[in-house]
Amino acid sequence: MPDVLLSLDAAPAGDLRSKEGRSYFQWLIGHPPQVIIEIVSDKRGGEEGVKMRTYARQGVLYYVIFDPDDLLGQRVLRGFVLARGKYEPLDARWFPDVGLGLVLWTGTFEGQHQTWLRWCDKDGRVIPIGAERAEREAARAEGLAAQLRAPGAEPEP
Image 1 (cartoon, helix red, strand yellow):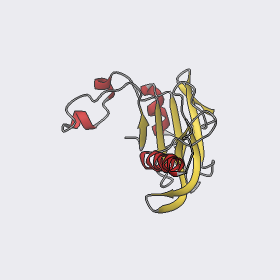
Image 2: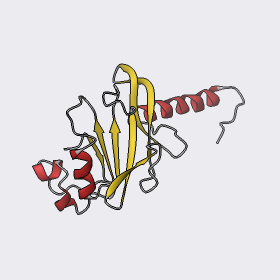
Image 3: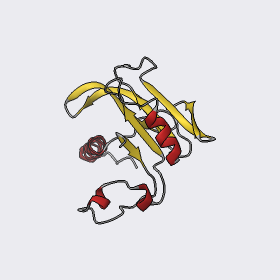
Image 4: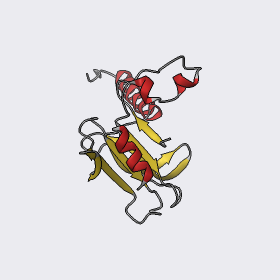
């Protein structure tokens, strides 16, 4: 079972209260996930061996090993693309067939300040989570409200 998976154009395979609806069964969904991310927690996880081979056999296009403590001694973030049935190294900052990439981001999330793995756009800009979007929208709305309160000011479009 992967730590993180991304599957585009996948609908739940059943009622969300059922096991089938809450799990990713490739035979029910109809295709493998496009991206699998494995997070290394110790050297015994098999991320570079059995897991990598298994996901290649399943046809997962992109495979990522996120090793926050560099326990495997191969870099914190490594990406791979499936080519001719095997994974070849790829810059994890961009997955062209998915339209997303990954970036290491240092900041506060859920009250914890540390380095996080985040989705990003082609230019490496972090994709905001819901709370970040809400904060930006609130700041934008406050700015518009301040413009409207200013005497003789017209709001900017």
